[in-house]
Length: 364
Image (cartoon, rainbow, N blue to C red):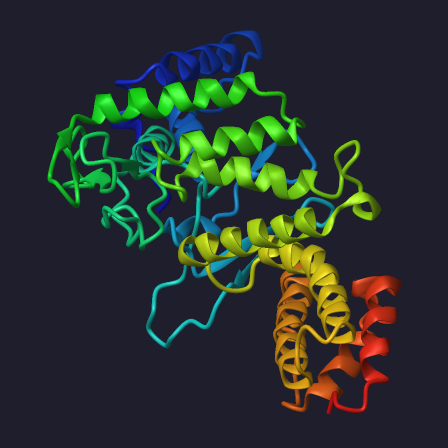
């Protein structure tokens, strides 16, 4: 049976909203078919179990899907077809026999442990104790950690992450901060970010250098800034793809690699975000690899090894964007390059690059 969380909602501001809805249905709509209690229960069930419909300002309830539990580090993802009105749950990674299938109820990954758990409690009325929330380092991502302002080298993290209002301690000098003190530090950084024009690459880069002395480089706020920069290199005025210098291309690749390394800890497997990142960045990696070979900066063996990594990432890109596993039937590099060159999803640019690689006799 689907929960309505009525006993909890009665103690919140949402109950007053439900009361107005019940009054509207019973009085203005003159609906006597259902009792007030039944309407409250229906509203509670919908609020606690429904999900957003992509492309519409609407929510829908899928009873079977509602039985799947939440984890901040999910092993499956859900896709709603607004045209067909169906919900599809897709395995994001290999799931062992007997392992629970879970999805992420929240929409994003870049939330601090304090905000994330508060939002889950507010929306779905339970305290999340998943592998991310119960680990003060959040699966070694350090997504909420700040830099100790006493020793200037340690990471300050919650001592008891499942306990609201717990003390945060430095893993180096054991200096402690209250949760409120940490939230105030994070809030000041957030306000500083909001003052920077979102397309000013120079100011954003300078901000990162300063902020990384206060927040861990993998802190959610700074990862968000880095992803903004990743998109700007190749899109911002004066930084279009054809205008990028070698140093700027290298920076874009660095930002991509850092983001993937961070996200793999919190959202591993077959994901759309990884597909998009790998799709965008590997055109640069392949071209640079070719240029380095031509300039004799790398050996043939090094070129082939780097190309193989790009091929693997492109295979993951196709799988992530398409939302299903990309079938690789061979370990032969030449055959894998040939298969990717025929994938329409990658487009003509990649087709040309990959066919150029196939002309090289040492790609075999």
